[in-house]
Amino acid sequence: MTKKKKTSNLMRIIHRYLGFFLAGIMAVYAISGIILIFRETSFLKQEKKIVKTIAPNLSGEDLGKELHIRKFKVEREEADVVFFKEGTYNKKTGAADYTTKSQPLLIEKMNHLHKAKAGEPLYFLNIFFGTSLLFFVISTFWMFLPKTTIFKKGMYFTAAGVLLTIVMLFL
Image 1 (cartoon, rainbow, N blue to C red):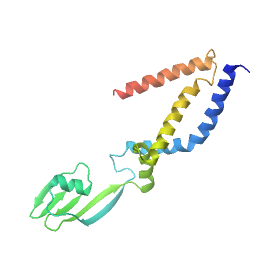
Image 2: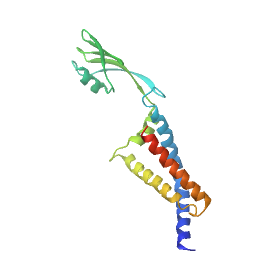
Image 3: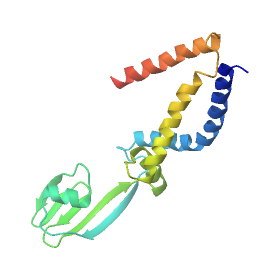
Image 4: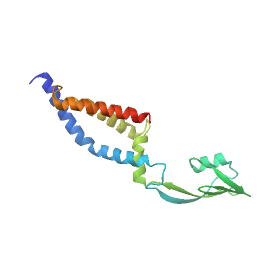
């Protein structure tokens, strides 16, 4: 067996079994990636009523930070009560009564795959997954001989994929 054939065979074998191994991870990434597209909407989110006591006399900005509410905006104030889109806050007592929307725990955990930071255990999974996908890209070019029609057509599809991605980045 020639060296070129050995390399091609090895690439096919690794590509095949790594593909089977990563199938589950890819499914989770795909599902959570699609769900992340709708993160600014109420899609799959459940409402949760929260009543808690926080520090009294907070400013509007500090109140938003304390309650962990994005795009927090005070709508109006009447006496000691601050009204905002999600609920109310009593400046005198520190009582906050508001509603939040969040996704179910499993979906939040799946979405965290895309947001993992260095130092978290998922960071290593993301590095492994990313390098595995890069291997898939490279090993694909060893699947068919360069002189075959399939390979040549494959190169057109590769170029189309790169071009589509670049166009979509600038839209």
